[in-house]
Amino acid sequence: MISSMNEALCMKLIEGMWKKQGLLLLDAFLPLIEVKILPEPEYQENMRYRSLSPIVVPVQDSNKKTHFCHPLESRFFESIKVSLKNWYYIKWGEHFPENIRIDLSVLHPERFQLKKSAVLTEVKKKKIKAYELDLEVHAPIKLQQVIYEQSLGSYGIQGFGMMEII
Image (cartoon, rainbow, N blue to C red; front, side, top):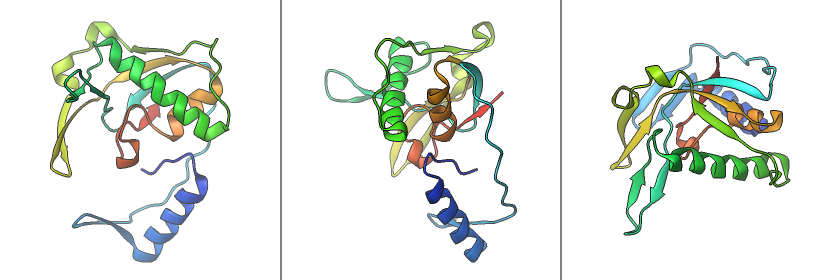
């Protein structure tokens, strides 16, 4: 699945994959099986999402070491909000209104298990800890569109944090 706020980028990528009949990632060739453009979802102020790829939330600790936050830490959601506000500005060309709240919460917290949601992966010889989970988000419709088109957390450009609406 490919997703981006930049529709022209998606179309160029699809065209290139069509011409090459696939996509070369590092040393793996992924053959093109199907191209389908999904219809625009109906965005609402309260939405539920499932991660299609794990969400990465790195923060710098006091020793300048990277700490990967987990969903039971408040910094996990605070960092996601900061990132969303930056992407909101990139998408819409305006700052996110200061007086509007963004509420993110784990869907079905009584069933959430941190160890089962954790994913440890390696990118460019760097270990990354990320989390797969279902979330409920209460935010303006324009921010919901950013979540769906861009991702949640960091490393979205590398494919992390992609969300589907449930």
